[in-house]
Image 1 (cartoon, rainbow, N blue to C red):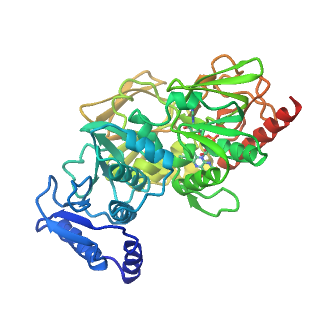
Image 2: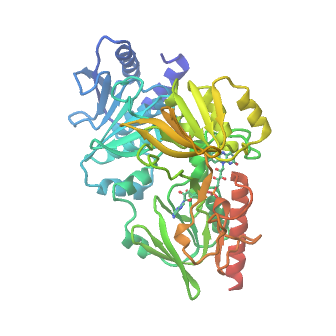
Image 3: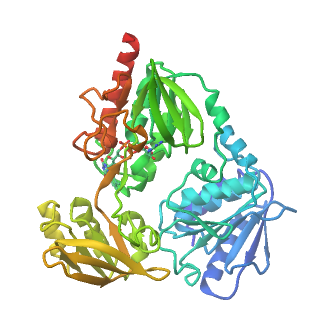
Length: 507
Ligand SMILES: Cc1cc2nc3c(=O)[nH]c(=O)nc-3n(C[C@H](O)[C@H](O)[C@H](O)COP(=O)(O)OP(=O)(O)OC[C@H]3O[C@@H](n4cnc5c(N)ncnc54)[C@H](O)[C@@H]3O)c2cc1C
């Protein structure tokens, strides 16, 4: 199960335990239970701080971790190997009393949460985004006695997870709470915690305030902080779209990396400078009054700054047809890299015949039973090389001039109806998944009428990143720059930062 090298590494980690941990295991005769017990016995053999007792718990196979004489708040259902092995090691260390590596301010925010909050997260052991959520919720459970967290491996609990169409899927007190990658700050914000409005209002005027947490904003903030300017970032999530990217191979000088790794490196780079990061916060309105930019946050907090850099990027464009919202995460998905494996052996459609749609169809064809690609126009817009590859696959079909009309089903998606734009006839395709790949929309609503935008809603900037309002700059995918890429966003973030610096020394 664990090779000698891994056992040796594990033994070194377990030496860092600061107190005793009681593992309570619920096992039966089945293979997964036996594997779980084998793993737990290996762990026990490596540390004399660990004891194991057996008891019947809510789910079998599962086990809890607790301090002696305390109720357990961290539970693993299934065998946390694969990407969740690190989650298990961290949980053992933290339950033993070892402090988690997180800001003191975040720990205080977790301690303040009232609860009771009982979380359950469905994961798959191959999901790369799942450990972030599992580790965040385990850590919160260790810090605050009003929080519990149970990780459930969908593969070990197939019946219970049969309706889960996106991982991680997070439930709070039995109700859906979220799906996809969530940081600890985002979870705290969704629970009504986080930085309070009064704390925001108490902040002094910034030299530069950056809105957004993606490559453009990260680059902008690092550049202005390096100029010695008082810099703040208000970001819904650090990393931006990169969080949803499986593999990145065109960030020049880094041959290959993953989205989560890239996002973490970006967060670490930002943290290395004196930047006031207000994470998991959304801006709702901006204004320029006299010489100051006024920024309002969704939690009611208000900030002022001498200059503003907007790097709010873009988000998946919705089809806006009946059924799309109802079946989100119950068949409707946007990220083929993330959710494709959940549709293994099923019939799916991809809506959109541009590069991302055709790429998605090619990727999915290797996993699912059949892919139908629907394109609104009468030709595909994807590069020829991609179209050729798609055409060479045996389990794909391309339907052009198709206007998606409706998605239907019961508790899960069952069918997509489209109108043939040439004949006006309606057709229905039976399927279990629809991947929407019709491009992205810029996140610029909060700028209202203050800033000039093109007909796609992108902020119009000049070659220095300046908008129509002096002192307000924009960079990255939220602007009308032609190409939307990480390296380009970072370059334009740096340009906007240097322009803001130039503006400040002249005004
Ligand atoms: C699936 C996928 C794969 C990709 N693969 C690649 C690739 O391999 N190589 C490559 O170069 N590019 C790739 N891209 C494109 C690349 O990710 C984007 O061009 C880049 O992330 C844009 O950076 P940005 O900082 O402009 O915006 P974003 O990354 O979109 O970041 C914007 C940030 O602003 C935040 N935000 C939005 N509104 C608000 C608000 N009101 N208040 C506070 N914060 C807000 C968002 O939450 C987000 O954190 C990919 C994109 C996707 C979706």
